[in-house]
Length: 120
Image 1 (tube, one colour):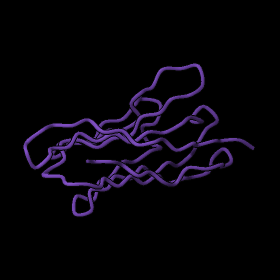
Image 2 (cartoon, helix red, strand yellow):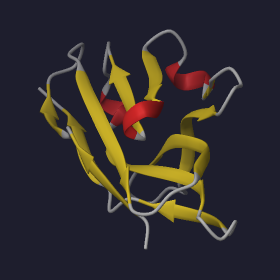
Image 3 (tube, helix red, strand yellow):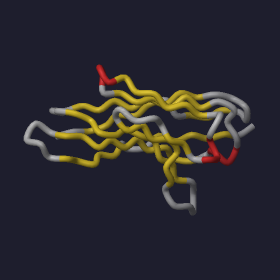
Image 4 (cartoon, one colour):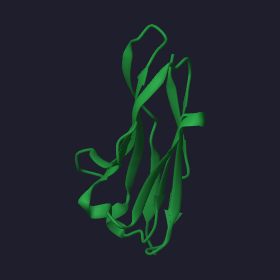
């Protein structure tokens, strides 16, 4: 069984910074993709930043220049550094990973979500 554990959400003032972390645990042969999505109240879940293995990261236009995604392959961990936060960044942030199990099964796994609130 593979699962993701997220941390780092919270309340921050506009212009502030937060760093989200997501670690994949379980019997994993490889990871094809790790990324962050978010869902604000009344809105659809959207991709914030994604980091496929061996490929450059991609970002939503709304966060380019403010957010940075990075991966630590040795620890199966992905981070999202969020700077210059705005009220419209308020949402539940979800980590997603596409992993390969030892029997070559490809699984899409989601974290439980962590709340980010940007407010003065």
